[in-house]
Structure formats: structure tokens, C-alpha cells
Image (tube, rainbow, N blue to C red):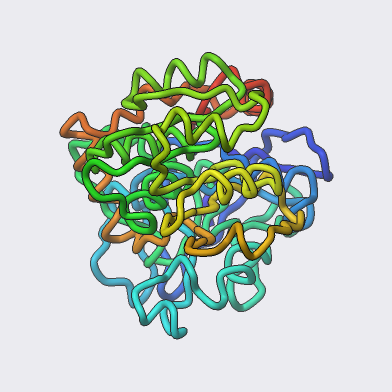
Length: 365
């Protein structure tokens, strides 16, 4: 058993409470990781609000990075001290996992949102010995120590800045993967990104890596649009503009090959479809509209391909090291998106994220 500090959510809506918790030793196929840093993601906030499970009391957090502290029975390829980025759990045996799409695992929801290991147990207890739900997206890294399945711990270059890398396991992986793995724009094609928060800005960086001809950023926040232009977007469109699809098409000179909806409401998804030219590709990666319905006419879909994106449809063990390499080469400057906070200031980090003052808050353990 290991003592740890964790931000515990005791009731729906919060607040988080910093508590001493106990973390079990890693079991077969698991590793114990000492967290260095954890990103705060919009998905964490959906869980705080009760839009997503698991139930309270719970330890959330799913963008962790750290060092392997102990290795359970049967684990190969990881050793104590290895730097790792944590990624969601996948069964590794279903049709989609075997087919090379582990982030589309057929058991993704129960494995990552049930608040428990696959056998129903939790590695987390509070100071009174009471169970805490955990294993959120395979980790629950709002704690200084976490138990994860070994396949969720991705080894990374020891020379890379580990305190910046946690969001590669979710938000940055989602945005970059939506471009590099799903939409796949060719050099010179036009890509539109609706919503330039953490996911959307990672997509802008990926579009620059792919050398898109036009990269159009769409948002209501002028500071975010300015940052997008600094990071490689060629054009910016105010999302408050009347007839937004027409404004996007005009900015793109009438040619829109790909659109990423990084917001995920009915309105933004409809805009993405309507703004895309015939034969174009649309990826919907946002989750702000969880539970919302989308109705479009068949004529709007005609000739277009629509993808729902989970975690950038990546294989984390391969894709996260690729993103680390891009960062080290200066092509993926995620440091421009991050602001660090002590774990004890998680409340301020969440408030800054909701207010748009910080693109990607990262908690330091």
C-alpha cells in the first residue's frame, strides 16, 4: 500500500478536496506510477457535473505523466523509474483493438467510466479505509500515485519535459490525432477547426505539420483566435458571425476539404457539415453537447464523410512517442498552451479553464 495525496470529489458539482488516500499495490498486469503532472480536461468537468460517471466519492484525472514506481506480476517492457504518459484503458482483445483501433475498443465505456478495475475493485481508499471510485480513463491521476494497466503506461523519451506531457494522453492526442489519423489532409488542402481550445489548437499544430494550405480557426474568443494564428492558422473567423458556414467558405476561398468540430454541440456539428465541400471530411471530436441530438438533411450529408473521433483514433503506444518527437523538434509547441498549478490549487485551475483564461491547466504533484 502507498500513501498519496489526491483531489477527491465527494459530491456532484464539487468542490475537490485534497486528501491523503491509500493506493493498493499493483496487481497482475498493472504498474504503480508516481505522477509528476496531470492535465485538467473538459471530460473531467463533465464528470464533476454528473454528465459522465463514475459516482462520488471519486478520484478523477486522466491526463497523467510520471515515473513507474512499482511493477506488478507479469508485466514486461516497463521498469521502475521509466518515464511514462498515461492513456485510456482498452481490452486489447476485441475486434477493434485487434484491428489497430484501441481507442475504439468495444469495452471502452465500462473500462474507463465504471470507477473500477475490470474485476470491479478499486485501488483507492480514503484515510478511513473507505472505497474511492477511481481508474477514471484507466488512471485517476488527480492523485500523486496511481495504479494503471501496464498497456496504459506509454514509455517516453527520458529527455522530454515530463511535466508538459500528460495532456498527450487525451486532449492533445485527440486534436492531433483527429487531423493526422482521421482526416488525413494532404499537403495544400484546407482544414477548418471549429473551437480552438486545447483539442482545437492541437489540431492547428497538426495541420501545420501536414502543411495544409489554409488552416482556418473558428472561435468566439479573440485571444484564442490570436493564439491560433500565432501557432500556424492562416485565417481566423469569429464564430458569432451570422451565416457562419458561408463566412467559413468565403475565408477558405470556397474550398473546404476537412473540418474538425472540436466543440461537439449540435450547432457546431451542423456548421461543420454545412461548411464542408462535396467529397470533404468532417471529424467531430468535442463533447460539449453530450446527449444532444443532431438533425441534418440528406442533401447536407451528400458526398461528405463524417467521423466520430475518440482519442484521435490513435494507438497511444505509437502515437504519443510521435507527438513527443514532434515537440522536441519544435513542431508541436504544447508549452504555448499550458499553465501549471500546484495540485492544491485545482479549484483555481478549473475556474481558469471554465473562464477561458487557461487553455490547458496542468496540475503539478
